Image 1 (cartoon, rainbow, N blue to C red):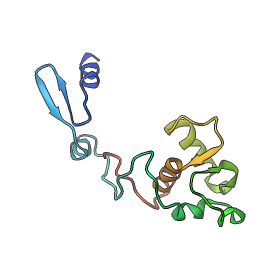
Image 2: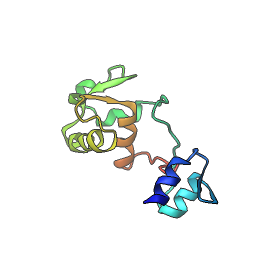
Image 3: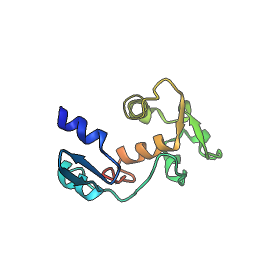
Length: 121
């Protein structure tokens, strides 16, 4: 437990230090250690992205709306509702909200196999 705490407290985003040992941290290192596959897309939570691939998850009557910021959860097809609820509650901890933001959409695209995220990144 102490090693984990020291690692976390000294983590800079590029490296960490545990005792006298300095460890470089990169997506490649994370991939090697965790065996989480590298995906095709590097993306941060607050970056904009093309919402067009997400439209296939919407009910037909909502496909042509301007989807630039958020979408009410009720616009999503029932077949994706459970997965979206899991993303809301367990990945982004926003289960009490009823809006789907771009980062929820990215995770939905990833977990349905449409566009894979580079999770180690």
